[in-house]
Amino acid sequence: MSRLDAEQVRACLEGSLPAQLATSSATGVPDICELAQLHFVDANHIALPYCYTTTLRENLLGNPRAAATVVHPDTAARYRLAIEYLRTESDGAVYIAMQARLNGVAQGVPLLGADICRVLTVEALPGPQLPLPPAPCNRLAAVRLLSQKLAAADELSQAFDLVLNSLAELMGMDHALVLCVDESGRWLYTVASRGYAQSGVGSEVEIGRGMIGSVAQLRMPIRISGLANDYNLPALQRLPPLLGMEIPIPALHHPHSRLAVPIEAGSWLAGVLYVESAESRRFDFEDEDALVAIAQQLGLAMRWLTRPTEIAEPLPEPPRSAPVAIGPTVTIRYFGTTQSVFLDDDYLIKGVAGAVLWLLLNDHQREGRSESSNRALRLDPRLRLPDFDDNLETRLLLLQRRLAERCDWLGLEKLGRGRFRLRLERPVRLVDGEVTSDA
Image 1 (cartoon, rainbow, N blue to C red):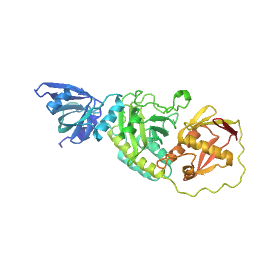
Image 2: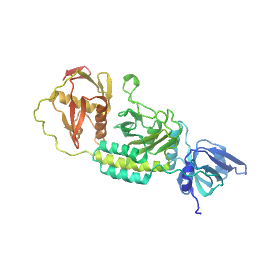
Image 3: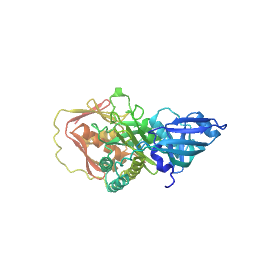
């Protein structure tokens, strides 16, 4: 029988079942305690969370040898790990990963350090065992197929939908969100979702708050099994509810499993990919590894697909009869402070997406122009976009999807890469502060 190591008992370090730690003081006084979280580092090392000064902590400092008994959550197989305390880390990848996981489980619990321990031996203990259940899918094959599909995507919208649909079809992850970082770097906003009654496009989460916000802040995956609470997935809004500008973030009523990973391309944080399930312990470390790989592929695709497109400016549109606007007039209100747009009294959108829609509506009213391009918007001084990472493509996608969800008479139609047309089929009245006009 081959020698066991921490890699082979990694499923026992997931926190589904508590581990028992046996230590002794420098003078030989024994102690046994339960620890909810052991963190896998590599085949030869694990880490213990240092949150408070306890007997366990004091014993490790006085006598570094200890034993941990862990249980496999599916088979009930038991293993004893002989470990040796090496050092405490208060920064670095291991500490950040443990802090991220702790943030997702309990708000306000400080992680003072990660106690790194060498795994000396791993011993299988006698006792009855259940057969290991089959894996829900071949994750490596799913990642390979999804990566091939994603490489062929030529539009941002296509990339998001492809990832979410593939997660459902290939990996059985039916409830998922893609959230992008906004231009301020303080908020995430939902641009795509799957599996929910309401898409939640435009809903926001503050970076650093809750499970999703913590993933963006720490740039580390968080995976949780157990009933959700208000901290794990807050439906945070950017503005007070009294302004009527809240869009609920989609969520299962009782998610028992949650997994969120950062979407990155090099040093660029693009957003967060989030999945959840009503099934307990639905996601394991192999699912986490697979989702991290998928999110990195998505991040690279987003970087490529959101690059500024150098195309010639569109020629003036040939004279043509404007479509007859029918139906009651809709009042469209714009508030420049928040760049928010309301259709009559119903909130629609804010931020860059709101400013873009207002600009297009005004150009259509004054000049009869309905076609434009991403490049034209970037060069338009009225938008005041930053020189780098202006997030314009994702904001245009958000606007397009929000309009499609909210009304059938106003929308953005793609004419090709980097080009689009404003579709307006109702008479509108534009209201900006004290300035009003009719169209």
